Length: 387
Image (tube, rainbow, N blue to C red):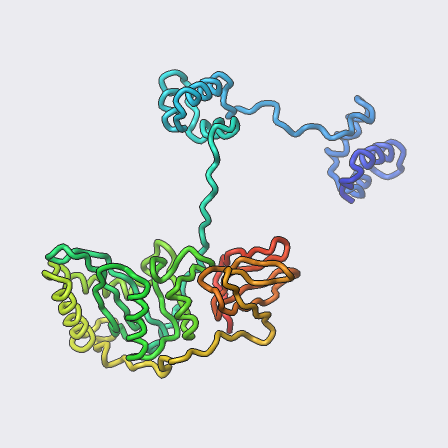
């Protein structure tokens, strides 16, 4: 058996005593105590040289620390900081003229922190990403893709932010609308118009920018929360991987070449160019990836109509369902657990996945895990959808 941590010295003493008197071989004795032979010889030798005191734990601190900042350098850092209140980069520049062995910026900053001369910044909370999106594009309206094409100025100096929405299967360009700014409410109104005209898709794929995502739990935004209440799953591509929305990016290149090089004189005339492009793209232009078919010949509206009164978000019977309060928390085991201000007055579902650990969902979207050890919801690392 390994050393018992509560009586370490006693166990070592018993081992040394048995090593001197036992009829067992030294190897067998070490095996029974769960230690190696070199460890066993070490304790026997220490006991012979120092007695029982040699069996006590010793400090594990290294005898030397080659990367430790020398004391004269530390004193010079503190002197410069006290005189000028400069940060580590400026202090390093001064030290460069005085010392041959120059400490790094991180080393200088550690000295300042150790002497309480700077206040460490609270780390910024970064939300994790649910992982790559699915490849579910086997039929029209299975996945829509959306993005704001990079802004540009029209001839009169007005900024134009084109919102584009496309059916991923047929490449049918559902929308190309120029906005003067990126706005969640304006975007929602355009999507409501699309849903009334074409019905609801199963998924909508976007990048991680506003208004499609945010830094809230599950990277939800007001827009994506609305999509979920309509029965649409929001999908986010991974940061820095535009190829995961490659069909949409390729359409953007053609859009820019045909409508914005050069830009039109006003936002109104620019919108006319967008409308003309959309008509040509959908009904006239053969598409190579579609075997030279036109997108309009493959696209059909969704069979899921836009509902006037969406059904409430539902969960499987084995889920625990809790309503998020106006203060953005839910009650769990007589404790308040913060969820998100975006989910106020909305139901979330909890599924037990381990002892005291619960998966938290809003609709089909996995938000994270609630651990009863500290009653906090931790971010999700990988995507998990209800089936």
